[in-house]
Image (cartoon, rainbow, N blue to C red; front, side):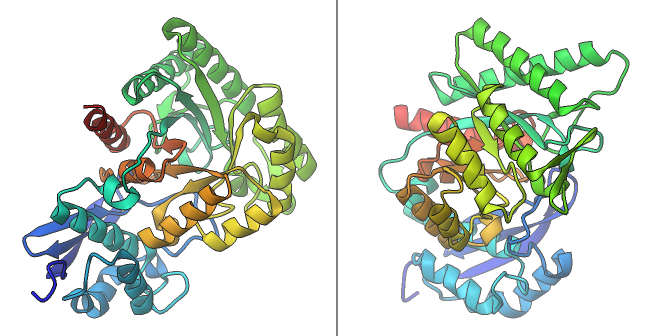
Length: 403
């Protein structure tokens, strides 16, 4: 090899995600060393996300890889992540990875970074983030609805983030909140069905108001028992129930102004700290009204609003739409594009929250990214193997750094 970081090979295969759907996994080889990454899939997706697969067909992504990508990667300098990701854009030839598929580009991009970090024998978080990593807090989905369950709440996620002394403690307390909520739901609903949604949050045929009360009660009890502060949050995913200027809940319809007031009341009246996607994903001005009223008492987060896209984040900065940004690599398609968005947000005093997707694999790369990006939270569920894979990896990183 002319360069010790030359890519000597790659391959792509199909595996399965947590919903039993097909997912793409990629490997990048540098000699005998390799990096592997599998990309997740979202049920609740923003309109401005890159396309996961061309025509929603994973086989077309794999065909594209075999025809256009595999040979093009041979001999490429893997150490230049930015140029690697630029090459993926050039091979794809579209502005939203609709030819290659954003999940394929994500898997290849992260696999390349892992290959280099493995070759250098350093952790991925150090390779991506340098020498000053910090630990996020876990933000776990406890009650679910929206597109993540069939008969759940209109609001997609009711979240808890315990502020324990260690990340391990925080994960444990989140699990305790999840368990207590399950007990309360079973007690309340008696013979009615209580199940688990896509992200292993409890799902039941209850109103959003009932969910709010149950979350507050369970968190208060666990907080008192373990003497730990617990922050509560919601992900409205409001675009999923927005229709022609109004927001359609199970039992009522809210106007835009009523939705804004409701989002503010969750913070001011109910004490919720984390407010995500309270309005549909084009209403930058409405987000700004909510953020202005809540100010620094909580974090207002854009997910569908931004889709990890630096240009959309710039607009949010100009309009002061939010003080937080959700980060999902496969919304934008490469690690380099993700880093650009994170740097832009951080430079403008916006907190970042690295997030899983509803259709997850056991790949734990978001754990490293959350640490590398100095993110405020890592949002990756509360229980479930594919969720705990990420949480356990942050625990390992914390243990390694403390030692």
